[in-house]
Amino acid sequence: MQCPHYDADRCRSCTLLEIDYPTQVLDKERHVAALLDPVAAAPTWLPAVSSVESGFRNKAKMVVSGTVAEPVLGILDRGGHGVDLTDCGLYPDALQASFGPLAAFVTRANLEPYQVSGTGKRAQQRGELKYLLVTLSPDGELMVRFVLRSQEAIARIRKHLGSLRSEIPALAVASANIQPAHAAVLEGDLEILLTERTTLPMRIDDITLDLRPQSFFQTNTAVATELYRQARAWVDEVDPGSLWDLYCGVGGFALHCAAPGRAVTGIEISAEAVVAASGTVERLRDGDGGERFRDVTFAAGDATAFAVGPQGPGLPEMVIVNPPRRGIGPELADWLEGSGIEHVLYSSCNATTLAKDLAAMPSLRPVRARLLDMFPQTSHYEVLVLLERAAPDLP
Image (cartoon, rainbow, N blue to C red):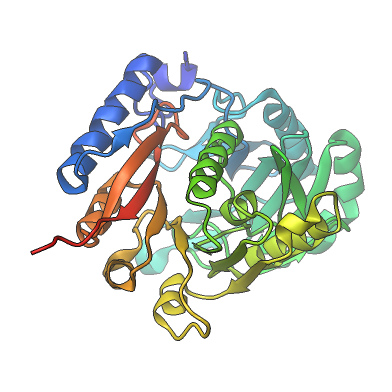
């Protein structure tokens, strides 16, 4: 992928851009194998899932800088100056097409870009609009979130939202997130919906997930589809009667791995994601093949606290974990090691913490693994590992 911003040293986010893509994937395969094989008794590695090299991102996080009259959407360089990335090659055409109307909307609604001048106690904050977060669904609809310093601009956004929807007919969901702190935090707790629609449908094979504004979804829809397909295949092969999906998000793994007669419980710390997942499963129950989802439930809570706490009727036959980059941590790893559960499916976006977690679960041996290149042009990737409890050593 050729990038004028990289060549001009304006943006270096794509750290592997100078390496041809097949070599990137091969290097990632070598990297994850070097991390996992020493602690995982060399599982069987399936061929890696590659991505298209450009236009794969379904979400844009655009820092808003510049002025009301001439807003800049993109990133800040090392000197704190705005860099226009509306033509970034990682974004598909449908996302790129939305940036021009959004920049014009900033001017029309008089949304002053947020900026800080001075340092330390002399630092002064001004402006309201920090980020524009734009998400594209597989069917071409858009969700736009305005990350604001306060609610001061809400009335103006509402006033002019009709004109924005005329310019972007695909705009389905719009909201404002209030993030008042001057800190390296993308968004705040308060989300104000600005449209009647509250969810963006994300169609993945035969499952359409309902994405709410504060819900997480993988940024590469095509590779996420392959991730869920592989998970479903391995879970169906084990065929558990009961399944926990810890760190379930909006229910991607839980819903794809649901089956008639299989009790599935999804646990997620984000209440917003649980609302979305619960709405999805209610809709699926009313559709064709709804029997598959009769025993799927979601609840808000900490994954570790749920697992190690009292669970009433008993343990599941299988567990899926899909933790953030920090991994599942020692407490949950210790619990899984001693639980007696026969199979665990671990989806990881950080192979270093995955290797650490696997070392803490020596009885759960990885039998199969697959790298999925969710993030081309960077060193990041996803890896899915099927763990199976080893038979105890006989004297």
